Length: 254
Image 1 (tube, rainbow, N blue to C red):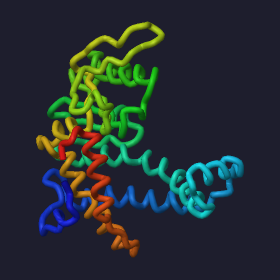
Image 2: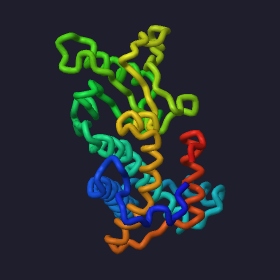
Image 3: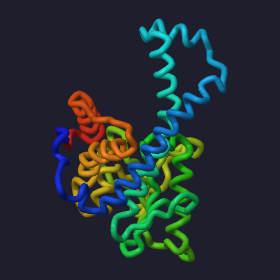
């Protein structure tokens, strides 16, 4: 796993996309994080603060007022950042040779015309939940099944970068449950659900492509923040925690 020194190389961060592309997309998310934090601070009293909840949280969490306020600001900004992480993965994957990021508003997120693959990318398995999963299946089916469709005969992937525990390392037919009908959607080998590690491998041809990205990011983040005069470095403790989170998300592949 990353030890804080592993990326001090005179070489590219990743084999499958150029450095300037990686840096641009990382910088975009960092900018969103900084902006979200500032916005949360500026608009802290835009919505009425519940003093009763604040009181119980301070006592129950053993936080003084200043620490509680900081946690509230972080909580408000965190959701904004998380909403853009899926887009980050979409842009990274779309920068790989042969792949195209169709951007916001497209029928799908990614396409590889030569390999006849389309993909819808979400950051986490619970980004879309419940009955809405049927809608994802139906949308993908409507793109690849009709003979008149430009995607007819393609394989459609529903990508969950962070998978459920029982779907780690998976590339399976996507058969969401339809509670109203009391059954699952029809199995179709061309409509699939896949986790981030497996999909990065499929896109790049590199089995450890997602882990390579994970390794690269800390140095890229530190470099970008240094250029913004926002000094930050991941400590050994930070690294240990991050490595543990990665291991738990992707079955101890570290």
